[in-house]
Amino acid sequence: MEEALAFGAVASAYARHRPDYAPAAVRWAIEAAPGPRVLDLGAGTGKLTAALVAAGARVTAVEPDPAMLAELRRALPGVTALPGRAEAIPLPDASVDAVVAGNAMHWFDLPVAGPEIARVLAGGGVLAGLWNVLDDRAGWVAGLARAGGSAAVGPRDTPAGWRAATAGLAVPGLGPARRAEFPHGQRRTADSLVATLATRAGMLVMPERQRADTLRRMRAFLASRPETARGAFVLPMVTCVLRQAG
Image 1 (cartoon, rainbow, N blue to C red):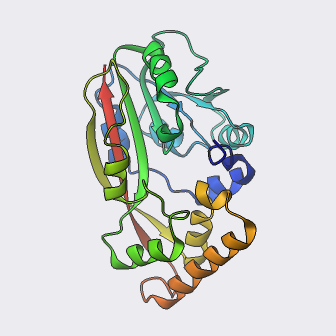
Image 2 (cartoon, rainbow, N blue to C red):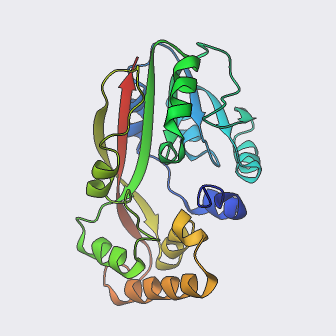
Image 3 (tube, rainbow, N blue to C red):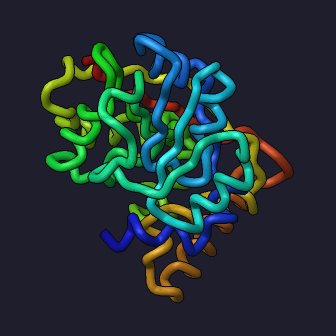
């Protein structure tokens, strides 16, 4: 998919601007795992990898994009980081206690990736997907979503949108999916928030003139709002988690 392959071109911007994950969400994602061995699948630049390490996990990261993988290795030199993808995981059978994916599971070809995930999971292992979404219950966040359009704030990028988009997302053979949502936030300025939204997949594949117009609209909107017009602010977010146990 074109969008899935677009992130490598902005790997350093992705690493700099994308948010981390709510620590409570990360703990919940892996708390039922039978041991500390965790695979971060589609690990990107290591945003979730770092949170898993901080939570005490023994992490192996797998990422298909060379530029994203290079950023991860630079940021987290102590983590084993391998090239690979969800549909062909470069690990032995039953070698991890949990498989997690941060803002990545929707890119997987689950009919192929599901059996691969089940193969590398030890007995009783856990699969968890985490997504950072914008909390559009804040009025200015909802207004920003309208200003940016679906390329900047897509179908999984708000809590209600995430619930709808992941309603049927599950790997056969594992237990029933459980969902949880955790308040989160990211300290931003208007410029850094626009830079963050510019790393969204839909923005990266947009024609250049349309992309520039969209970024301009979002900057104008943020300049017009008292919450965001003057200096730093906290962007309201939610870390949403989908978890299955073996």
